[in-house]
Image (tube, rainbow, N blue to C red):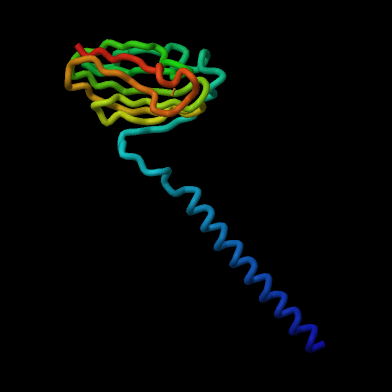
Length: 162
Ligand code: CUA
């Protein structure tokens, strides 16, 4: 009877240890799960989700293009695709603050405006938002800097700042 009782104690101890182990690993996994996503140099960048096969019926991507939302403030809804951007040109006034809202309808593309700090990925299923103020007039190119296929080198759009 004494041995039996000792076994019970040890089984209880083993179960307690197992529980503690599970709790610790669970807490660790939870902590990793809620840790911030990969660091980005863009503090004003935001991410969202969208079904890349339903962009034509999903706002705001059902109406890509430029929309004035304030005093010299615009929303630019853009869809990257192989191999271009929709729309392929936007015209904005000098000093305009532009909120880019970008996704991809097919594969991963880049969205880089040389001469600015705008440089991010346009990914299918992801909505990336970034705000940039164009305080210099001129013609800016948006280039794809992620290899996306045979037309990659030709993939670009134009931003005219007047
Ligand atoms: Cu799109 Cu490279």
